[in-house]
Length: 162
Image 1 (cartoon, rainbow, N blue to C red):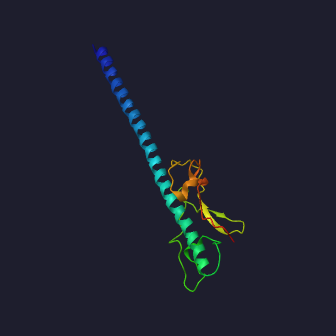
Image 2 (cartoon, rainbow, N blue to C red; image 1 turned 30 degrees about the horizontal axis):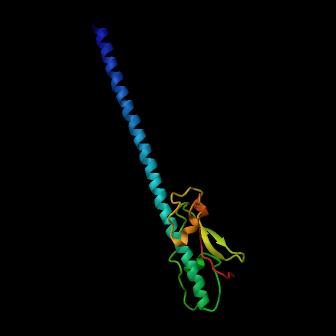
């Protein structure tokens, strides 16, 4: 009888162990799904921030250029610092509140320059694939169908660049 009790008890422990293993497996699978969802949501959030910040830089470059025209000049910035501290007139002008980092990489933006070496835009250094592929506003319509964030160029276009 003792041998029989041990055998029955051993089978019960095996069923409990199997149940625990199944529970651990289900929890691991659920954790993976949650982590993937969190990563997706984080990237989508950063993507929206990328669009906002990139457009802020584009508008700041346009403001810098427009301000120069009012002063009788046609000039683009040689440095992103010129956008937060434009000292071409008696009072310092801010075209951008502060320099923003690239939200996709956490690093500085890559600058896009014209043939004269003046900054006409910025772009991300990220090679991640964007979630957003269509439905862009007019100023960002060129981003449709791009396969990397680094292909999103936030450029101010002027007819005659110096």
